Length: 363
Figure (cartoon, rainbow, N blue to C red):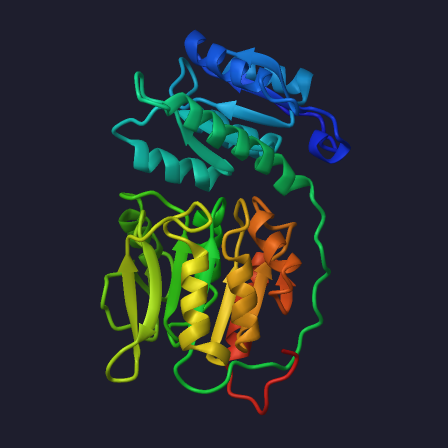
């Protein structure tokens, strides 16, 4: 089937209530979600669907701003429905599902198909579980639509002849929602001669090892989950372990060493892009390239500004190719980026910046 074109003006941009369609086969879950929506002055539940077939018809008739989607439903499951929805009529989707034995695979697959966020259903009887769930859900719903409706704060910068100077170079990448697909596309456009690449992808504990293993099969770089104290090597990329911060420091022999730590969440995240970017600004300065990819929220924006102030050259993914423009948008607003580029142009630009040139310009 085909759908009519998506509205060009979303409710979040017009000041109207955010129109949410709830898709879940559980009556109790639907009631909980609708009660949460009813408590929000800027949201309204426009419909409830018990399965994919009913959801399809409601989306066609109601044209919601955002959909909450369960994964386990009778008939077509949530992943199959998500794939068809994103192919036929891209709509912001927040997955709201109970953890299962296939939870890791489901989350990564849903992110790959275009889900903008994944919120675990609260466990029965957990103290404060419903309140915490409500806060996470409401934040994700607002950001899901806001990230699709806010226009870019600045235009594309004119390409400069800047290069990243000196030896001891580093590349630091921050990503959240949509990053599990954006990052491999970026890495595939780099060569195995690049300096060490550090990646913070917002991801809970238990997911990052599998994600790193997947990245390792998709491009020219050797990709692994970062280990504390590990010397960083050219041609390698290091993924922050889920639930832990990743930073970098100088080793005793002058090279770079990965640091993995618990610490408190920063910008509500662990791992946090902010932690990585601040450490890179401190130890690498004008030998660094900072990259902000698609993601929800503002993690890393101010630290990316510190990176630029330290002499780094920073790139941000543009709105048109971002699943969620939140993190790139905030970095741009902070004045942290020299260039805003489509996703597939970032890799070639990085390679150009790494070429030995004369004096850097355009910083």
